[in-house]
Length: 75
Image (cartoon, rainbow, N blue to C red; front, side, top):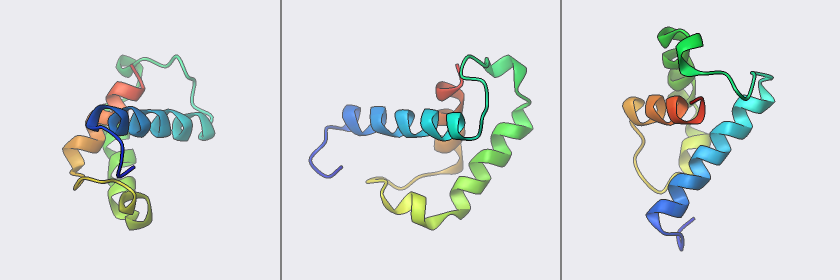
């Protein structure tokens, strides 16, 4: 991802999260209103604890960033 533009890297992150959600067998068309805010926070905290997944991110991830990415992926 080093040679990607910021936009392309962000799109790749969103695509990866969508794939992750699909792998978890969540409905792809699930809207954010149907998911409890706490569930998104739990998912985000799990990602923050997995240093292997964060290592490929070219930027420092924050809990707020990850929560935002989940919300975007699920909207």
